[in-house]
Length: 70
View (spheres, rainbow, N blue to C red):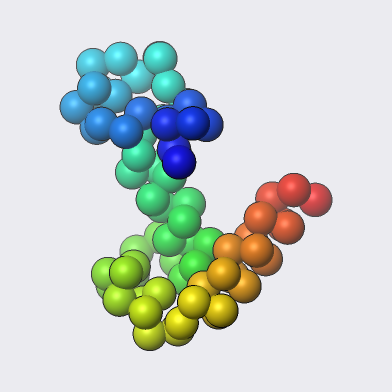
């Protein structure tokens, strides 16, 4: 997902060539984490998504995307 929009999927590669990308895969993961939890730091994201369920997870992502695209 991140590579398709210009983010490097490999942190080591990104550090060697930061000008070749918008950011690293960790940046993409942080965006997803904030979209789902509202925080930059949280417990394991996979566990959180399982606890809140698919519908709530997708709803939060949809809400985030609507905010970004406004």
